Image (cartoon, rainbow, N blue to C red; front, side):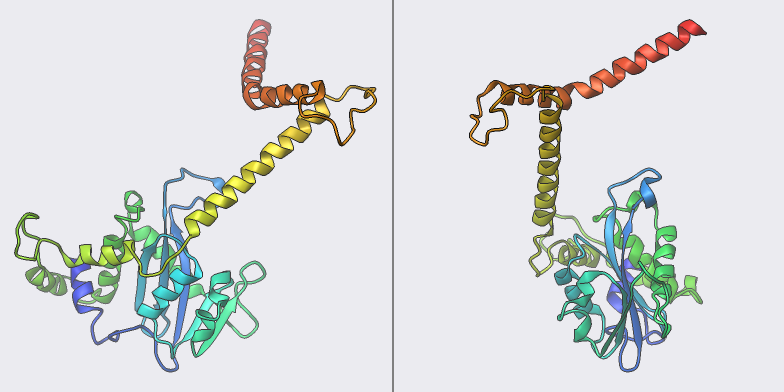
Length: 291
């Protein structure tokens, strides 16, 4: 009820209609991940990235889940929700520095969180950072998925907009909500406005290849690991007195030295964990015997 009402009617005249921000207004924006574990602590979940923008003057905000946080996705989000006459305040994420993102606004201020949280002229993102903390407290952990998070986010926005007259606004919204009919009906009302909104978020009109780039980076990282293991294996198999010609650049791939290196590599890859388990068991047995 809350999610559909705010999608249909917005925040109301008290907070302003249309895009947030405007002439001489400041809008803070940040990206946050629902489900991230700080410093590797806690139980990790799949999580979802969300883009959040909030007006400093009215407190009105927009929060949406996204598949990636590249400059194309951020530009698409800002074009739909933030007035270009606003002053945009962000952190030091590189995507905001693109010509089509930050500089496209009347003014763009940013703070580098690796060095400071408040600049000398007072620029900070404390408002949106506090909002991110509140959103993570208001939403349940089991909803931190791309398909499930949109309704809790919209409900948080509705509660913020109607906190002074909650029940009157709720019963009015409940009387106007449009419930879906049977999915096989042909009356054109088989889907809710929330499902239509999710279709837009699931299939944005911008092409992003972030998943492909991430896969390439992962493959490159794994290739570096394999090369490092190969180098270590070759060093471990070197005899104390190397035979003449062993380091010849024209040595053939099938020479005995290379075969020994490959055997050592396989040994490192597949037998190290078994050796560790056996050694641990032996230490445990020895400790039990002493006891």
